[in-house]
Amino acid sequence: MILFYTASKDATIYLQQPYQNTGIDEMLEISKVYYGDTKDISRVLIQFDTTEISKSIANGTIPSGSFTASLQLKITKAEELAADFTIEANPISGSWEMGTGTRFDNLTTNGATWIYRNGDNTTTNWYTTMNGITASYGLGVTGSWDGRGASWYTSSVATQSFSYTLEDINLDVTAFVRKWNSGSITNNGIILKFPSDKESGSVDYGSIKMFSTETNTIYQPKLVISYVDNVGVTGSLTTITDFINSSSYDVSYRCYSPNLKTSYQEAQKVTLKIEARELYPIKQFNSTFAYQVKYYLPTTAYYSEIDTLTKETIIGYSDNSKVIKGQFNSLIKLNFQNWPVGRNYTLLVKSITSDNDEIFEIGTFDIYK
Image (cartoon, rainbow, N blue to C red; front, side, top):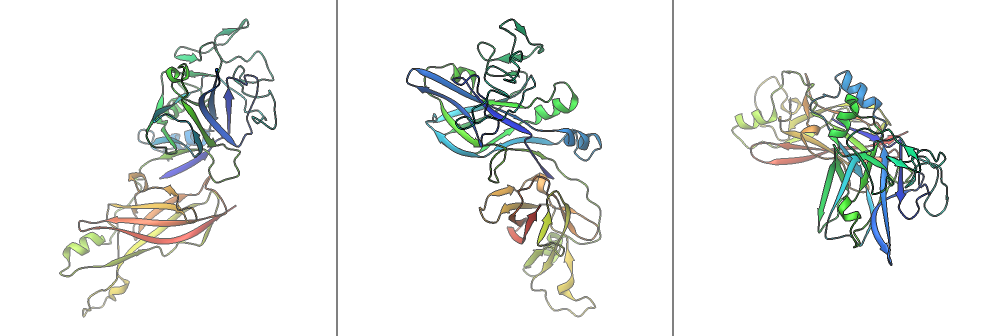
């Protein structure tokens, strides 16, 4: 099962604009660049409401010991990056406000800035003692060189490294979500930045811009929860693999869904029936019409969802997107919470047998609000 959660707030904070908020900017930026002799650094703050995740873990819907969590952001622009570079993420150790500013057009000081967690309250410094103000963060917390530029827990870190290539950001933040759920640290979000030694160095490290939660595109930042859905049953059908192995001739088959609709509402939960049927059955003298005999897909069958227009993968083939067994059909379970609306999606099924791998296009559907 794959579940998507969109960010509740995000912002970029800049070293050279220490009192300025960017909470409603459509872009987020991680950077370390020089303008002449002046160094500028930017870091991204982002937070997701994990209340529903915690509820689902508590009631057993999400298996507490085997789920994974990934932070996904779509890169829109990159400049002057090193051939090899790394992005780091840590849990933020103090609360902060999103604010209502942008970097260039709507200049405000309310919300998170390089110096303050909330620029409207000048007592909310990020870290330790500064200007006579003492923060109350526990052990395992660090900030930047002088207590500015946010503060975060060093005990948990996620990294993504790039070498002569640029992919979208996809960070494994499972450890963060587990700690938030257990209550060992408070969910104040995640900070994304270049490594501290690169930030403090004397050469450019480049700039990466990503779509924020304020974007008008389909590319909002997402927290993706994935787990293997083992809620299958023992049914009476033969798998197509067993049928192929027991047949004295080459078997071709098709895969389809008898209950796929053309549209679904946002946040709707759907269970799709998936069936395999022989394409060219051999004529036999019996009471069963061979074209109507249906089979389970093999245990090594997986589904994928792609955006029909852009061809981008929404859900890829993996153990977490496995086709499961129902009593009378193979099944695919989908939850359309936080899927972009007004889009058309294509459902694919990959069936792996001992002879070959086959990909079937099951159909397309729209998501409406």
